[in-house]
Length: 165
Image (cartoon, rainbow, N blue to C red):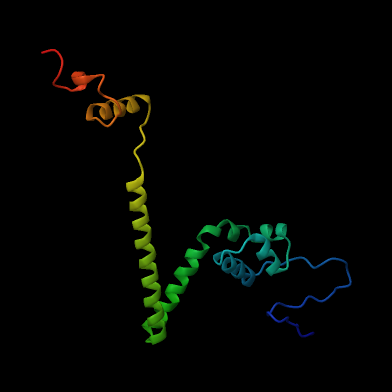
């Protein structure tokens, strides 16, 4: 039995089998984990395919489910890191306790920043009327309150108390 050779990064070196082209790609759990990690780091499909030594169609064919979950891979990675740090902190690892504290503080800061941004956007957003009637009511309210531009020509005709008695 021949001993397997590995390159600098731990990938097996493919030996020529005497035929043209490269051998068929085999999806392994290690490669699936690698794809999920690279997605969590924000890598694009082109870059991931190059790292796996395969083409884009091959990447899409063998790793479709991992690519489909692209949006949640970073959250899954962060959750995994938190769990590992928590396990190590519970075992008494002081460095893990410090790291866990930093991760919690970073998460709290992110949540607070999101709430502040959401509140600012909500406050700065002008209410938009639903339709023509709502817009007409809004315009009428502005005219009555004096916000709506030139109201001198109407005089007291727009105030609720004025008019026929």
